[in-house]
Structures are given as structure tokens and as C-alpha cells.
Length: 360
Image (cartoon, rainbow, N blue to C red):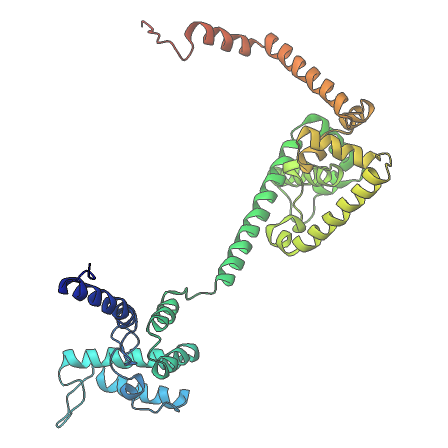
């Protein structure tokens, strides 16, 4: 049998497919590659050359560009524009003068900034990089006008100032409260009498003080003595400059390096060499077991810390026993508390799952 005959339609289809395969990359190239014209509507001065709009050359300096802008701005300003005889410029009417003024302003904004002018010159020299020009143009247009670093610095400073005054307010409230506690007030009064401070407050000079002024002065003396004699710890302690957020950020690298050195020493001394814990290390382990911050742990009384050390709470088994004892003690206190008893009766009789009606 002879070779099978190929139909003309099949041959035409095969040729069409081959031509489509060859034509596809060409069509894709035409789709992606934009016209080679450098001036594009929507970028900078649109289809007008910014240099031609201002009437300067590409080699013009900042002073020449600014001088040309001022002349054209005075000429085409909508409030001052007066068409001159034979004026063939872009602004022949107030409306067209306003458009010309905006175009001149756009040209000046483009050429006065070195970075923007550099991007614009690159667009004129490389018109084929269409998408790159769009990216650079809108990235500069949409970029924040204020440096982000300045915003962060101002925000941190504002937070630090707020922290400082807030801490001082809390500290003064703590001192005012301690001045009302009889234990501390009597001690402070005795110290003031020994130092003769109260007598000075009551001395009568040329300017006689009223009773209220004497009382306020004595109160300030007592508060100052309490400030000098009592070391307040925790959230009401005297504010320190180094605790502010600004200084914490500045000292962060130092604290990080100190922590790394401290951690390496801990590993070397106690994990590798097997040394015994000192008092400071024991208190640190106890604080971590109790999940307390340094300020919270420092606010505890000294006798409490001595009790922790005597019971050897840095050992995990001892701490578990202590924790269970504290929970049992808390349960006993709550069981004997009248308010807790009322709450349990309410939960049993009229808890959240019930609706009760009270008759007037």
C-alpha cells in the first residue's frame, strides 16, 4: 500500500501552529516593551520637556533654573496674568494661564531637587526603561516628607518626658502617703526637732508668717526628712534618669554585652566548674522561680528574703513545697474571710446561672 495522503487542512494547521510558536515571543515583546518616547503622560511634566518649559538647557545650574521659574511664575500667575499683544505662549486666557503656571511649577519642582532631576535626566536618556521610571517617580512622590528617624526620635523623647513626670508624680504621692502614717511621721518629727528645723519654721522675723504658711513649711520639712531617710522600692521609687526609655535605648548595646558576659560567666562558673551559688545568685534563682520582676523582688522586706534563703528556695524541690504551703495558707485565709464566704453563698444560691426577682 502506498503512503497515506496528508490532507491540505492538516498541513495548513501544522504550518499555522509553527507560525504561532514563532510569533508568540514577538507579540509578547511588543506587549511588554513600551514606546521609546521618553516623555510620558502622567510623569513629571507629561509630554512636555521640563527644561523647555522653563526655557533652560540641561546644563543649567540651580540659580538659572530658579531665575527662570520666578520670571515665568510672575508672568503666568492667575491673579496677575494680563495677556500681552502678540503673546503666543501657552497662557492666552486666565484658564490657560493657570495651566501654564501649574506646568511651570511642576517643572521647577522636578529640576530644583538634585535626586529628582537625576531621575528625570535618566528617563530622558533611557526611555526604554518604562516601568523603572514609573517606580522611581511614584516612590519619591509617595515617600514621607519628614525623615522617619526624626519622627522616631521625637516620639521616644516625648515618651521619656511623660515617663519622668509620671514617675515623679507617683513618687510624690508615696511620700505624701508616708507622711500620714503615724510610724513614719513621728520619727520624722523627732528628727526635725533634734535638728532644730521646726523651730526655724516658727521663728518670727520681719515678715510674720501665717499659721497656714507655718503648717505648710513644717509639712515640707517632714516630707523632706522622709525622702532622705526612707528608700522606696518598686513602682513608687524615686525616678532615675537612666531608667527612661531614651537612655534605655542608648544603653541597650551596653546592657546586651553585659548580659552576654554575665551569662557566659554563669555557665562557666556554675555549669562547667560546678561552683556553689552565692547569695546574689540564689536570690536571682528564687526571683525567677517566683516569676517576679527585679523591681517587685527588690520591694520585698529584707526579712522575707532572709526567710527565702533559710528555706533554700533556690532548690526546685524546696520551692515546690513552699509554693504548696502558700497556696494552702491562702485557701485557709479565704475560708475564714467573711467576704469570701458571702461570695461563695451567692455563687451557690444566686450565681451567674440563675435569675432572681426581688419584690419591693
